[in-house]
Each structure stands twice: as C-alpha cells, then as structure tokens.
Length: 175
Ligand SMILES: [Zn+2]
Ligand SMILES: [Zn+2]
Image (cartoon, rainbow, N blue to C red):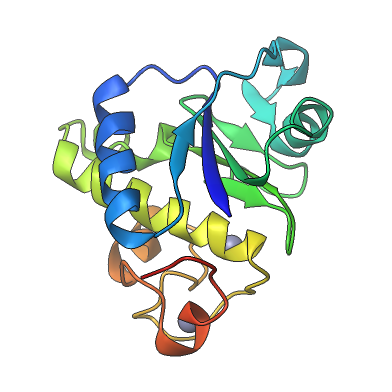
C-alpha cells in the first residue's frame, strides 16, 4: 500500500524532500507527493488562531478516493481539537487519513534557535506515529517506541524514532 504526502499550507520543500528520503529508507511502500486542492481557511478559528484538524480531515476525505493507500497531510499551520490547547497531529485509527503540523516541531518555537536536524528527527517521529494510528496502533507504553504518546515537545524528543517489535508487526511495508 502506498503512502501519499499531501502538503497543505506547507512551505519547507527541503524538509519535505528529506522526509521522503527518510520514509523511503523505512518503508517498502512507494512514497508520493500529491496536490490536494483544498482551501483550509474555513477551518481557521479566529479566537484560537489555529486550524481545526478534524474538520480538515473530514473535508480531505471527500477529495481522496482515487488514492489507494495512506494519506498524510503535512502543514505548517498550528492545529487544534476543541478539548486541547494544541495538537501535533491527528489520525484516523485503522483509517486512511492523518494530519501532521510541523509548527511546534520547529526548535525556534521553543528556544528561538533553529535546528534543522532536530526538526527532521521530530517530523520523522510524528509522521511514523500518525501512520501507526492509520495501521491500527494505539499508544504504546514503551518509551523507545515512536507510538508513545507525546503531549509536549520534550516527550517527542525523549521517545524512540522507530516502532517497538510489537508495534512494528502491524505497520504494513515497514522494513
Ligand atoms: Zn497518537
Ligand atoms: Zn510500541
């Protein structure tokens, strides 16, 4: 099954190319970049200054029947769901769609100093994490596993960059 990356308001082509390179090393599945024509401005909350991820996914579902595989939306904008102050990403458990924001994966967001290697590492972790949910994985208690929950950036940095042996078996095409 193929993996489709759909940039939506995503502006770092270097990061995108590096992510594709890294995913290609890890998956036997083909990785494609697809252009989904969707204006997400309707899902922007003026009060929160963030975008409502669940609504974006719902809209994208209507536009992606032709893609046979997993679709991960990649964005620079900050995401929310009503119960939380922010989210790094959201995925359909055992589904086809997920969304990941790199807004809060940028080190400059925290320390004011940019760190491109750290950004790539965090982006790989969270991409694998959201894809893991698509393949039916729930959160894992193993800190070495990328399926460990991350509520803040420290937890993203602490956890491992691959699946544990138990989780790995569920992820189709993972080497
Ligand atoms: Zn999760
Ligand atoms: Zn695990």
